[in-house]
Length: 102
Image 1 (cartoon, rainbow, N blue to C red):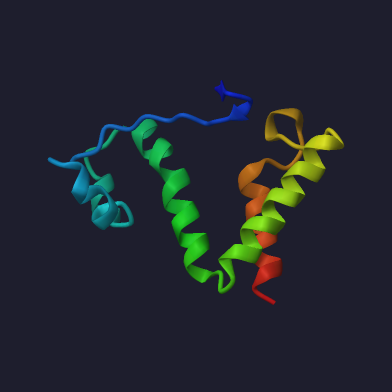
Image 2: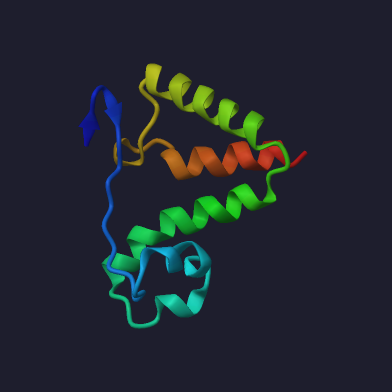
């Protein structure tokens, strides 16, 4: 989806919680995945993966800036997007995270 010139991946997942305040506390808990269908699990995996990657990065400000720059660079050169056979967002994120760990 594109909103006001900004690309947004909008995902939906039905979570087994009774209130929104429980989500942040339980989203990284693997037991929450039991009873969820495959589509919902895939939808929340992006958030779960992002949280795990950010938890190992020491300088998140630099990480975010570098990642935005790399994605911008790749898009400008037409080499961004897994549907086109190139690295996508998650792949670039993992590569930048690996570099930031040195």
